[in-house]
Image 1 (tube, rainbow, N blue to C red):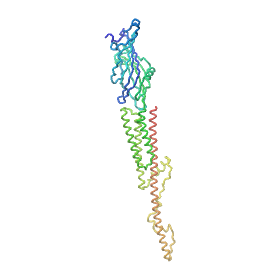
Image 2: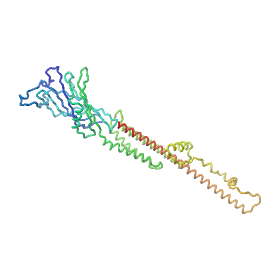
Image 3: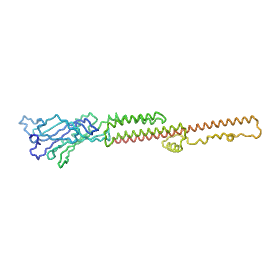
Image 4: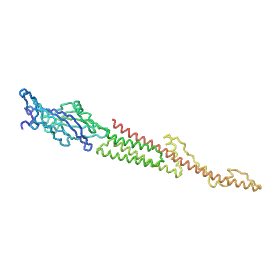
Length: 419
């Protein structure tokens, strides 16, 4: 019992404990529970003022290993723990002849970690481990770091065994004290910086999404009259939704959505809007079969101004050819006489001349009918050509808007990952 009290000759003396920590590996970083499972090597050094001997009197033995149950041990506590540490099988304290005691133990730590997932999967994380006494204030036990940040980083980097998704970067060591109910307690902070290895997420998530976007862009280059274009785009959207569901299963619920989530949602929205635009273009294309006239405002705003802005170089039929189509009542003899004046003899004519005039009149009527049919057919073809031109202009506008929106989305996401 005597050996388990704080080992000082004067109770007013403060016991100084030097703590050293080495990160061995990070087993798992749970994004849902916001916790980190890691293996640590922790070493504590302190002076036991109640133990000392002259090594020359004991066969030059200057240190011994003694079961830790027989000695006072600093109550080292990790404040971020979410589960109880696994009990260590190393239950021996190294005691030197000058009273210096050393305890080295491996720890399996399950600690909380505030993850910042905005740049997922190209994110860096910083997890804190706070070491300090739970019972003794600084007037009785003061804990200090044994090594500085550079030394701890080098030792951890040499011993780090990374087998998961995370690569070790550095460890920052700071020492402070905090106030709790009027008493100050020592605390040592180890800020562990790690970086995610993104290769698995790039190959299984980002690359398939990029390929689907390329296919969707290729579908925009198809002719608007191609019937399978809309079905092809819907198939691509279905595959993209599957990737979005996979991303939703990977990421936990948080206040800030990752930039990759914004990219997926924006890309899906653009794909849906482009599909709606394709449906509208198909509706406009259906007007070609109805042989209806292109409204004047469409000719003005789309075939004239918008086509000029989009550098769509094609001659459009804007003149109204209907004014040249003769009406049925124009087949009277009055018009015939205007078109082909024939001298009317008031005198007596021979029967042969009268028959020729009659035949010429019939031929002229038939020719005018043929001309009318040709003009009507020409007008229908020109209307169909104008509607086709409207479709081509709108399709080019949709393609330009699609490329612009996708480029802005991709560049914005890339800048977010890079900064």
